[in-house]
Image (tube, rainbow, N blue to C red; front, top):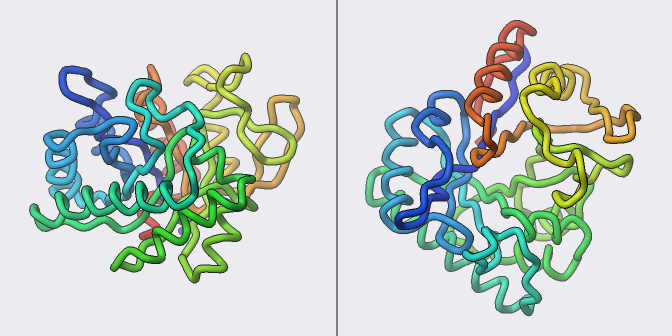
Length: 252
């Protein structure tokens, strides 16, 4: 039976501000990208999320980002590579320390939002991220977009790279994500999410926003935890993958 990872963003609540239904999503996914405090997440949330993931056998990843709480990490920050390197190490260290305190561990890294998109084609910033992960005292993988600058940077640094695809985001013909500001960029349950996920996992293809079918090579599928119908989408995807004979299994 073929297997694929199902990941989502979790632990992004901050103080009195609540983001997503973390408890429900933890029952549905195999890997979670936990906010490290720069775009979302705080010490209490990080600790609770690490405990909950540990108890459910869900693999923990560090969801590192630009230092942008006000913009939820979705605004590009023109930070020097040396600062970005340090910021990534800081976030990794924070989550790894919290996770270790409850007998859990961070197994991979997934950049968030604007940083994720930037290192698709920005070689300098991709190098800074890959260099930080390589410098961290653990053999962590990086989760990212196929054919990106960060994939190349990880290869150069000897950092394992895992390709992912997004079930709830529209794609352009070049295999990159449609910018969030464009109509149709963010998909909902009514957009055939479950069928889309099955095609990604079984056929290795995705339909672009223009209606063209392009190849996509992914070992992990992502559903955003902050989407309005995230839980319903994850339920539908799990069921559809199971019916297609594809089991959900963490890559790390």
